[in-house]
Length: 451
Image (cartoon, rainbow, N blue to C red):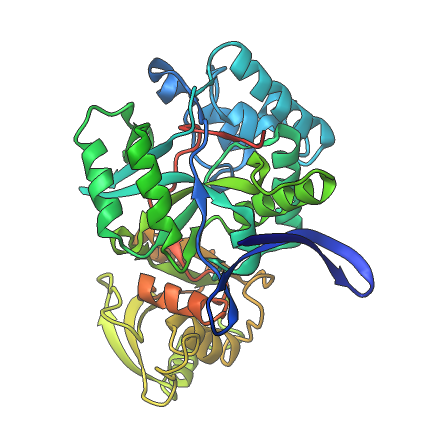
């Protein structure tokens, strides 16, 4: 039998976040135990007609600022930026958190549907979304993820979220009563799902285009055969967990709004559409995490020579000259300072291979370089440090140091999917700015309404 019951989270005697906890109760002759498993469902996606997909589709809301969105949407009334970055429809300088901006998002969403720029599918479907970058393609399934799975830990996190960012996205979900943009999940590889995806990928796609700017390919198929829909649902039910790869704030916001709606509905049953939010789920073995690097404005009063000497306590320091040096393996770092590249290899005893957090290079560098030598205690708030996604290349690090903007740059060997999943499985949280996934999901290929 399945049980569902509302639980109100309290902090300091005050009601904070309402949520619903669902667990499947499994019985046998000996005992009664709780078992968590993943639950998904198909949904009636709202999508652009084929001939409009390239006009509607956009980058995610959080990878560009208002000015960039305004420029990219210039002359294109069908751009999704009018819904996900609606401040572009106001005079420059308008606060993106102004209540009028959220209302404009809802107004534009309605208008897109009225004009036929977004049309709802007639039946609940799953979808295949493929992304191609540098000749490599990864195939994701677009599903309705279950809100209680987020609450009870079947959807696992590896990053902390900030309440202000959660609240921004919650307002956006509330006002539109929809998940306009998907979140990015990983799941343990599954041969049965691979076979279903391969069946549809062999067919003519619904959408197939190369996005402007990054040159990445985006291809999309509709899974509408009932037998395949049922098989996908059943395959996910056997999984112990899914993992948030990218989009922790969107996941939290979507789940919290769904939970709000559950507590506000006196006739809540658990099968309403608001109990689900939109996710693109990729097999973990198809995903690659790229490096996420650091640049620092000063050496905390040290000369480059003194800085290198301080590093030698915990690292083997090797000068590599003026040619870009890329980290070669776990626990090897690339340093650029004073016009030269250096290899830093952490000495034995400076890390613990049995500690899922302590073994991470981001932990080693944060503790032994940024904190101990440079005095940077909080990566989230210290203004002396900035972060550069590996998609920009190590040449970007050199450029920012040579310009005088920064004093040194540190490149890290990328985290593996296994490390990410191990950390999530043990209930740990990664340090800030650890993972960078590329390519980013394109927004506007499909939207999920909460009713």
